[in-house]
Length: 176
Image 1 (tube, rainbow, N blue to C red):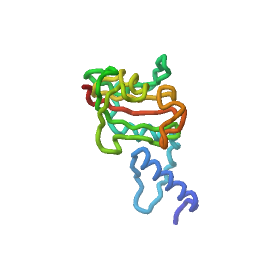
Image 2 (image 1 turned 45 degrees about the vertical axis):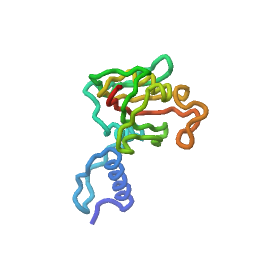
Image 3 (image 1 turned 60 degrees about the vertical axis):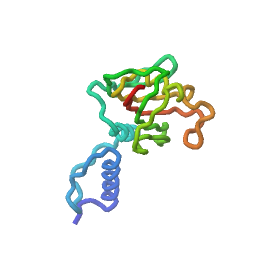
Image 4 (image 1 turned 135 degrees about the horizontal axis):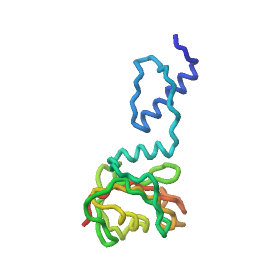
C-alpha cells in the first residue's frame, strides 16, 4: 500500500513528467513504485524554455551568463565562440535558429523544419543584422530584440503581435 495520499502521487507524477519532458532529465523510479525522495524545486518557465533551446547545439566553455546591451537597445550574449569569419550586414549567412516571444511561444524555428536556412543579413529585422555581427562562424548567440529593432507596431501576424520583444538562439554555420 502507498504511503502517500492519492492526490500527492498525482501531483508528484505530473511534476516528474514535466521535468522529464522539459529539461530532458530521466526518472529513477521503479515500475509502479513511487519515489520516496522529495521532488526538486520547480524550475521557472524561463529556465525550462532556455534549457530546451540550448539543447539544439552545445554552449561553449566560455558561454556568457549575462546579456550585453548595445546603444540601440539590443541585448545579446555569446553562448559559443566560433573561430571562423564574422559577418557584416552585406554577407549572406547560413544559420540554425529558434525564435520565441516573452510568453515562451515559439514563432519560428529552423530546427523544427530540420535544416539550416541561408539569407542576406541585411534582409532581416535590424536586431538580427546587428546581433549576428557579434558572433563568428561556428558560434552560437542568444539575442533579445526589442520591438523597435524587430517587427515594431505592426508585428508579424499571425505569430508575432505588435510591439513584441523577440528572443532567438542562433548558431552561425557559414558566412558567404
